[in-house]
Image (cartoon, rainbow, N blue to C red; front, side, top):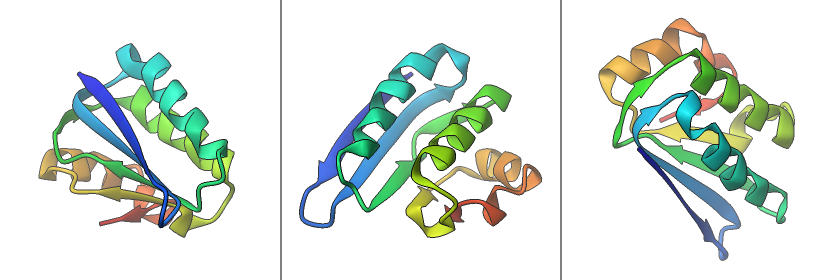
Length: 101
């Protein structure tokens, strides 16, 4: 389980990559990563290419992140979710709150 961040200064996009389990055990790391969103970024990409598991606390963390950047659905993209993770996001209707790619 790891959270990596990088900022694309040219496009002003914060990328947060989540590896392994996305659950309550990473909430402190995720919170630290999302604090960078206040540094003048125009968008956030949450890369779930290597995310194996998502629970309700992870969904809550994503909702808090959404509140932080406002109601703009396009402000946050969740990309490359594996089918089992994407299924959880679909059941939670996150496609209506985030851009899922």
